[in-house]
Image (cartoon, rainbow, N blue to C red; front, side, top):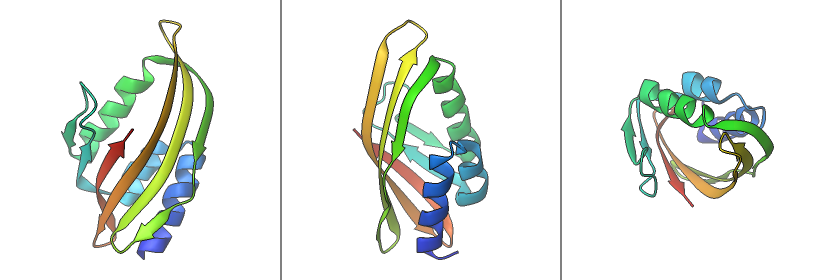
Length: 117
């Protein structure tokens, strides 16, 4: 797949909420998740560990009120996506997320994702 095709597929799958498919289809098995602002998920290696991070996060969410995935911006081997989500947590608190995710592509697979928020 070209970087444009990867970006198109990524946006489509994320907008459909098919996160596991994103990891299974588009990510390299040794992909790297970088989120330095996070106390728990700052530096994760391997797609299975990234999936486990998503499961751990989902366990604390009782309702997703809204999710918005913006259009991809492609620059050489990078894809940047604006991403917003509003959720209700198990403790009843509301949480709003407004971030940019930058993906790096090598040899037709996403090898890293970095979250900026």
